[in-house]
Image (cartoon, rainbow, N blue to C red; front, side, top):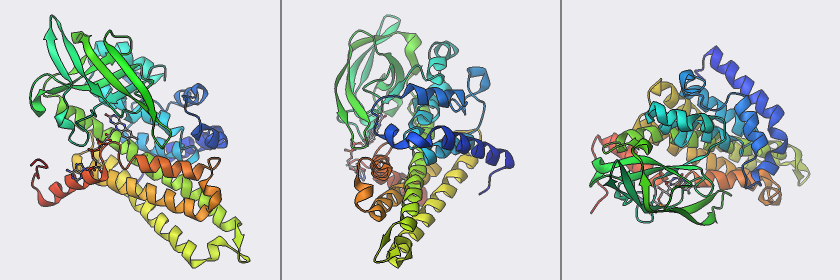
Length: 379
Ligand SMILES: Cc1cc2nc3c(=O)[nH]c(=O)nc-3n(C[C@H](O)[C@H](O)[C@H](O)COP(=O)(O)OP(=O)(O)OC[C@H]3O[C@@H](n4cnc5c(N)ncnc54)[C@H](O)[C@@H]3O)c2cc1C
């Protein structure tokens, strides 16, 4: 791969850290619903939070490539631990750090980078999923600030987050959309029952009932939607990186199994039907990783472009799920058990085919690039 010596060295260091510190309880962590503070602290101490955030803001001053190498290296040893790297680099934190005022950074960024605060992004609504610009959550002026009304659904960490980066409408149309920071203890903000996704994550419905939002909590005003979405492209690449690395994790487990497990007097890996599965998994994972690193390198110090993001996420999501699902098949009943990491990898990679832009919506975006034409999805 086209990595510099420095990048390879960084990758080796993080891989070694993850192997020594995280790999041994990967299964236990995968089955743990709660934020594991010990793991979080290890990741913070290793300098794996805020990799792309400038040092002047408390980050590591690295690049998107560095962050991608880090999250993949962690996921390769412990898929669940990569969630912390996601939250500290690719999630709402990245958009927040890019667009927050100095005061907002001083107030929240330090806690986010230390793993003491958790932020969830509230985009999806009951009537605005793929058609996210149909969102109805509204902001109406009230004195120096605004009143927030609406409902959000499906958000990662929404059941437990301390703050919500909520997309909301200052006025009609796409240009009317901006974003605000909602704090857990604000009057009028409440959460519903939490719901468990099949990947183990929990989300809760978020209700904003006339919540007063002071002007200090506005992240992006009207017209901020495009900026917000370009920041979200980083989150999508984090999601793509985890998908491909978690798929590779399952592949590695199944590969060892295929060499050890004997049936019909031979190791599984001697059956051509099994070999071809590994050939397909290997090629798809390699291709997806190349695309991912290429997208990150192309972005340079900018945010990744829409086509690169869509194509990379599509390829990585499909490759990751394909590998994890095939790995489970190779493992037989063992892979289907809750004490086995491979079924967890399959469930996790499945979710990323929906989260952060479904495969269908990504294909729509790619088609627009192919034809150099915008195709409205509306009747
Ligand atoms: C694990 C997970 C984590 C998530 N985290 C967050 C989060 O942190 N914050 C947040 O705001 N949201 C989050 N979401 C929600 C996610 O963004 C939405 O689920 C996603 O945008 C799809 O919306 P929907 O589920 O309402 O499906 P719908 O939009 O109702 O779509 C249903 C199906 O129709 C297809 N479809 C819709 N429109 C078209 C079209 N024009 N062409 C072709 N097919 C189409 C979709 O691809 C999908 O297969 C998460 C979801 C999951 C599963």
